[in-house]
Image (cartoon, rainbow, N blue to C red; front, side):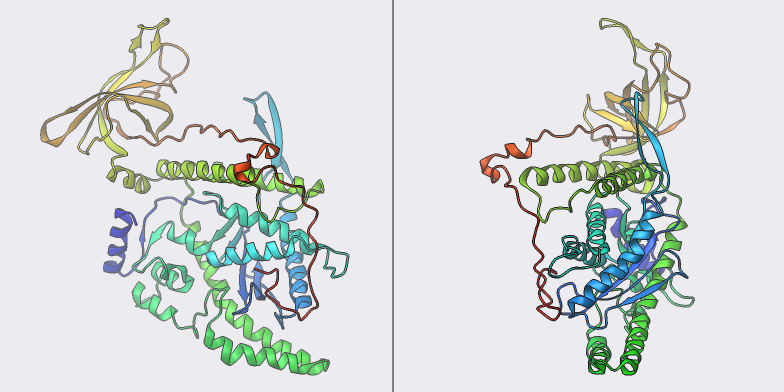
Length: 507
């Protein structure tokens, strides 16, 4: 935990309400996100029990699996979920936009927007990942056929789960993570995973403190768990008898319909509070203006959505069960680069995030006291514009002479540290030589050089281009990493009879 977040948590306890740790919203929020609240049967391997799905507060649709141990009902649930998710995805495939590439010499096309799925917590993301894995290899023909939409749904759920691992992506978002990215509560990180308790701190009812609202939210009668896990007391005393009643109804249509209606009401009552909390969370996030670099990260999600849609349309195969050595290394490299870029972009967008780096000595803020915007360096083969400025700061300056600094106000400009001189009253004078971002001539464009009196933030963090690593082709995988991957046939569908072991192939 960072120093400032620990301070914010202490302030939340003192004030009785969550404290902001961000001044802007660091993730994209769709105008029409698909909210999905899943519920799984306890003690089973990713056995879906129910889900509440919809793209608006008044569009909630309840999906129920009366007997989660029955495989036929599981895949019927998957087909029903596909009937909601796939049309939602198609809503974003009607318009494309041209994107310049190769420095404007060519263009490529991508969809104008992309879908966004919101779940209550990280466990909801895990549920979708496992559900996608268990459905994307199914076949609509053969010994145990499924509806044709089921494997397609599995491939899309896997796509969203993989995007959720990508730092800065907003394609699949856990509401608890989105809220704690912007606010600090007076409870632990584990307690923040409980959406009702988290929103108790963020938006407590009148007359209650955040701690009191969070304690009240722990009562499963008023605020059931946000899924996919259920409360054990609910499982034993209410859910199990309802499932048993449905099973006992057998082929009696009247008794079966009555038992199903009772089970449906029971599960809706469990999911409805979380559904309402999800949209309260969306409202809180909408109250924050998006950061300047959020749109650029969403462009990455649009690119990924377009690429996967084109892959599916071209008849490409499903994602592999496991990556090969080269593919795994390339994926890890992409995630590491994205994580580094995401951290820098958040700091550039948000003074509160940058304050963390000021505490560690990676950044400082000072006032420009001297500026020479016309300085030219003629010691080389040709003269180049190299203005110098002096910045006076009261913060510790831990960067050495010769280090390169950057300013969020002018991210394309580099500032080389020329002198660091202690001054009176605990101040420090820093002389910087500027390059880049000032035009191509020997006269700086207006506003490109900081003026005297400007307050400037300088940091070692850079949002510049990060080159990709070099990796061998898959067929050149060295023997130390398993050698070239062997060609694997399409996986068989091992689904046994409807009432066989429910854990098989669902984990």
